[in-house]
Image (cartoon, rainbow, N blue to C red):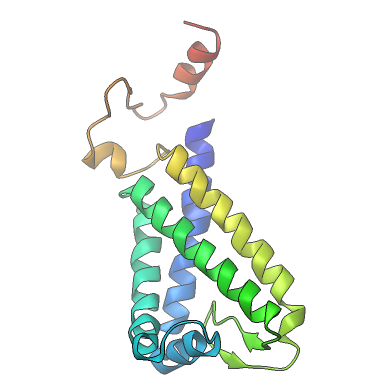
Length: 173
């Protein structure tokens, strides 16, 4: 069952990263504007973060969807979601009314504070999926199963296998 949950976690989280990054790629200045609007980072690094973030998001998403370096990508994903949750919370606490820039856009907008609870809840959900992938990175249809050797004591299930192993483990065999 964990293998299927891992697949769903990979596809949802990876898909969100791909969409978020791809929507920002055509407007790199918008991504910089979104990073700047949070008023958290020192100005000299804002452009670097703004330009790099969409590329990192797409690469992270592709790796997750393919199941490549899943534990590492899950950890990176979790760290980014923590940073986004902190950023949105800080903007809210300081009374800033900004578009989160999560899927493009960015900068000041009216009534943005009404969206903050939803944006934080969404990111917490995606953070939990990312943490799942750090704890249980093995999942169905993953390139990790092909590229990475099994760790000591692990059995890498083949196609159609794995569920039986979980049942046997639960029964104490």
